Image (cartoon, rainbow, N blue to C red):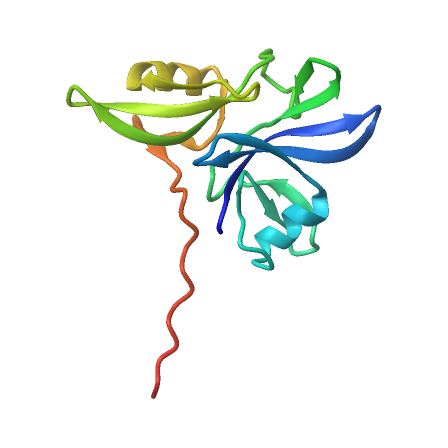
Length: 163
């Protein structure tokens, strides 16, 4: 069975990275994955789909800024301590990741999870504000004044043609 895994946090033991935490959709369970497990999933060697990280040509994991709009991620460096991976202009100790949308009373509502695994929904105005504050770290971006949500579907490989 294919799991959709949204990577939320990187776990450290002191200064050494040991694994990643991911939110599994649609069940809502939290799973821990090693760097190798994530790389294998990104390469298509498993049935899991991983969102939030990508591979460089040299095989290193990086934030998936292109397909999932990931700009930052939390690092868990100590018990109950989350700090931003990219500390440039962010003072947050909590990030949100947009995982989808639904209609509520004719308005678009955005489904989000937090880096502490709260699952909730936000209005479009709140999403725009949180994007502006860099508190939404993945799953959505602003483009021409509108919120663009990253699809939770991997692009399908083109079908071979019989010519």
